[in-house]
Length: 190
Image (cartoon, rainbow, N blue to C red; front, side, top):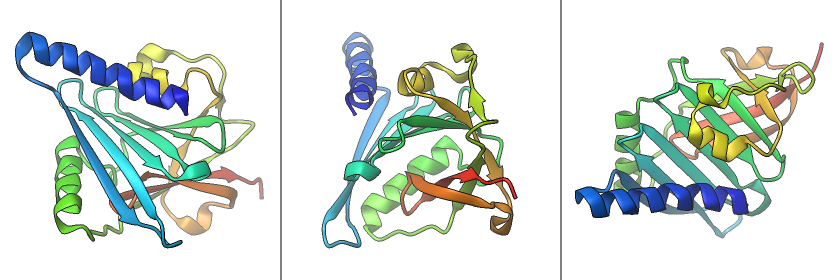
């Protein structure tokens, strides 16, 4: 979890320095607290960097905590799940991925309405043996994803159009809860 906090702090420090130099702050930080199914609260922190064209979503939920980076400049999404000690990356070419402006609108509506719900959901499948990326070109994925994933195994995921085609086990949920859910599942060979 310390690496995730340093990722966010690094971007906040860069934005603070830039805001002192230019008078503008390219980062917008949103804190969303919602009740969960267990009677407690679930906290999501969303950081949007308009200048560098990415968003970082932190879901604070104990062992189910995750961080997801939407890097619109490099066109990749990466999710790191605390309990899995791994990163999952997928290409942003899928039609269900909202543009950054749309994502910001969803965040605003979610904060304003408090109970916004979207049925946008993506199922991502990866094969633990075949999807492991062993030689990573971090330039291709960008620095936010490098900072998130450089010290853990990185798996390439693929979006599955039909949920009955998943043939998977051990799914975990990441993304932006209530706006764009992402389930990452280990594929089984059937």
